[in-house]
Amino acid sequence: MKIGDRLEVEWIDAQHGTTITHIDDFEDMEPVKTKSVGILVVDKKEFIILGFMIFDNLRVKHYQLIPRAIIQKIKILGVKRK
Image 1 (cartoon, rainbow, N blue to C red):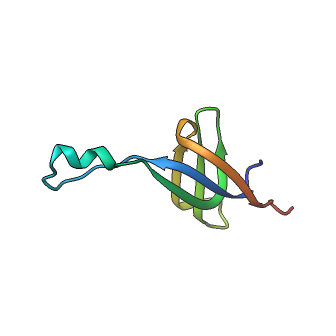
Image 2: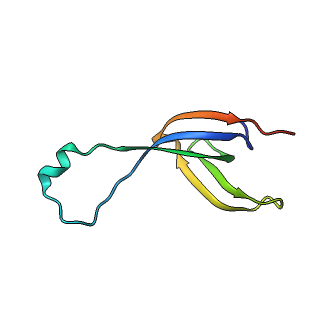
Image 3: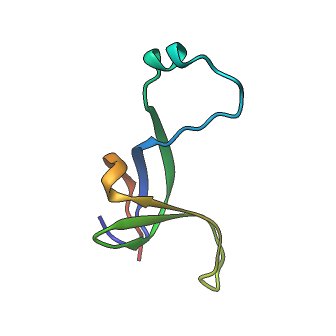
């Protein structure tokens, strides 16, 4: 996995709610598996950052930082071409 590779990252997302909910309704809740597809722009021990809109001048408009602790699986969809 290298900077510039196109990845599919499966991770567990946090949840929150703002409606009035009976406490018994939480018994059936489960974490939500989420998938993000983007270009790897940062690869650190604690987290990765995917870029979704990358311009020629190496500026990123839309990105997502995903902590490694919540990542379930990373699949390489394409490698950076030289």
